[in-house]
Image (tube, rainbow, N blue to C red; front, top):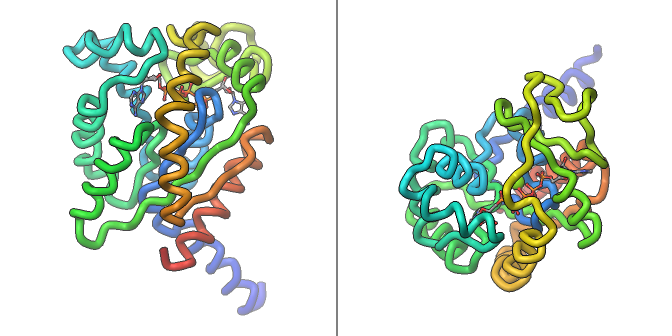
Amino acid sequence: MSAGSTAVANDRAMAAKTIPGPILLLGAPGSGKGTQAKALVKLWEIPQISTGDLLRANVAQETPLGKIAKETMRRGELVSDALVEEMVAVRLQQPDTANGYILDGFPRTLGQAAWLDTRLAGQPGSIPVIAVNIQVDYNQLLRRIVGRRNCPVCQRIYNVYLQPPQRSGYCDVEGTRLVQRADDTEKAFEERMRAYGALTAPVIEHYREMGRFAEVDGDRPVEVIAAGIVAAVERLRAGGQ
Ligand code: AP5
Ligand code: MG
């Protein structure tokens, strides 16, 4: 390899290790936030913080928060800002967030966005957030939601129509029986979409106006979408923002 091509390879390796900082994955129910977060975690070596996953863990463990959230989530409505913000605040204190984190499903109200903006502004030297909106149309979202199955052990995400496991009903990695989320019904999906349109769509406009914002077509193969997100984040970070 020539000196020139070695330098290019090193630059690429450095680019792949660019400190990603805080990344917000926005998008409707089923748009692929969790799927993309899991792919990006491996590449960037920063944690995925999914407020939905954290809430479901609280429900499973029957914590006081879980007891409050359980029925709200099953109906497809949003849990109160104060409860979710407190949960995120605790998680962001963990040392694994030092180089960045992928917030999956937070913020999803303008109140939560204002809370996060204020929190980050109060941390001198913190890297500004980049928000990425994953776009998918309604009929595809419905198919994704009703077809989704999860591994209860490794949290791997499958879809009986679109991303089936090798052996029907069982995780490829763990061999565990897959489960379906309590809110992955058509009825709850409609409520989740209503909450999304009324409360979360304005959050997308908030970050679009702030500038460090990208939108990707979520109706593509998983790796193509992930590459699009990485390219957008590198471009926005290189722009000095
Ligand atoms: P949450 O868990 O965040 O649910 P959501 O936002 O509705 O999003 P999903 O997890 O359903 O979808 P996703 O975008 O992660 O898609 P996935 O990658 O799984 O929240 C649940 C509830 O918790 C809320 O309703 C609310 O009650 C509460 N909550 C959470 N956060 C809150 C907050 N901040 N404030 C208040 N309340 C909050 O993919 C979906 C399916 O599609 C899978 O089957 C997957 O295999 C498939 N798929 C993904 N990508 C592709 C692709 N490219 N091609 C084909 N199939 C694909
Ligand atoms: Mg999810």
